[in-house]
Amino acid sequence: MKKTLQYLFEHQTLSRDQAREVLVNIGKGIYNEHEVTAFMTVYLMRSITIEELQGFRDALLELCVKADLGDVDAIDIVGTGGDGKNTFNISTLACFIVAGTGQKVAKHGNYGASSISGASNVMEQLGYRFSNDNTKLQNEIQKANICFLHAPLFHPALKTVGPIRKNLAMRTFFNMLGPMANPATPAYQLVGVYNLEMARIYNYLLQLGGKPFTILHSLDGYDEISLTNDTKVITHEGERVMSPEQLGKRMVTAADISGGSSVQEAAGIFVSILRGEGTWAQNAVVLANAAMALHCTGKYASYDDAFQAAIQSLESGRAHAALKQLIELQ
Image 1 (cartoon, rainbow, N blue to C red):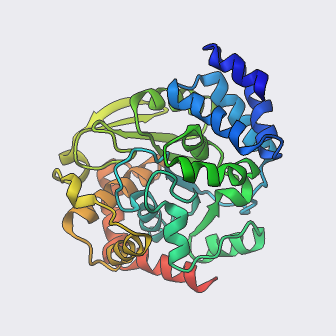
Image 2: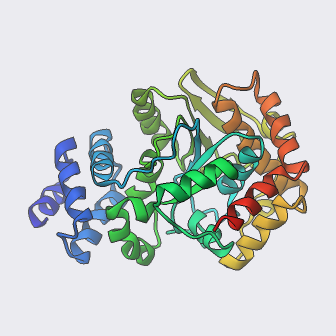
Image 3: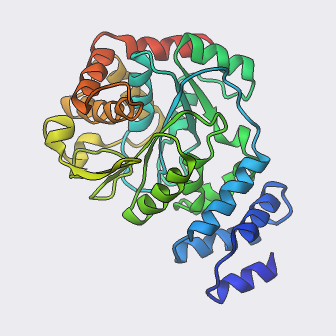
């Protein structure tokens, strides 16, 4: 590792193979935590290259414990995190809205590294038991239309660096890797990113994958549709900028979508929204993200049709029923 660090400190970049080798070794626990911290810090000081990101993803997938969910047409809805905005768990809530429409969801998530409550924090608080047992996961996605894939159980490298990421409390290149390494390899991908450069890199890599995808970036820095500003929307067909009025009928404020100050508070907000007790702004933001996910599948003629399906899922109670069913299966 010392030679690699010296090379990087001289403002060099890694080839795809070099990047893969380093992350494989991290996953195998070959380096100590100080070496790994120094390595991660390099990418806090400069942008990651496409070759490096491809190599890191290659390593994650090489070491990955695969998730076999059977013959399901699933979507993953995930943000890179690291936007520093401390919203409530918008993308995870959108997953349950989508599940309530009948669309299968294979949600890949982790504990929050730079926020109070990541997807895994809130799911654990609600009583979900993390597992990489395929029988359990298949049962969940068939009966509740959703299962949750806790990243460290499937990716040894993420388990190794978890404590370091938590101590750093900053976004690292692992934020970028998670959405590209879903162990179930779902048919569709909705991913939110925290800046436009990351959107460009994801666009390139997801185009290579050949599956339908949608990339979201709120132009004021959120890694999802926030309705606080315009949103850049990138798909395999092209890109456009959509206004809050187009996406959720009107603009909201940052205070409207705050995530609270503890995991318990975040979980409380989560359940209240699914019960139909959320504020207008909370509902609008979740529905907009769910609608964009549904539209990504190609099963709806327009975004507005997908938005109406999301509304029906929430207002009918089917989204909340999906959560209750999932927790009952634990």
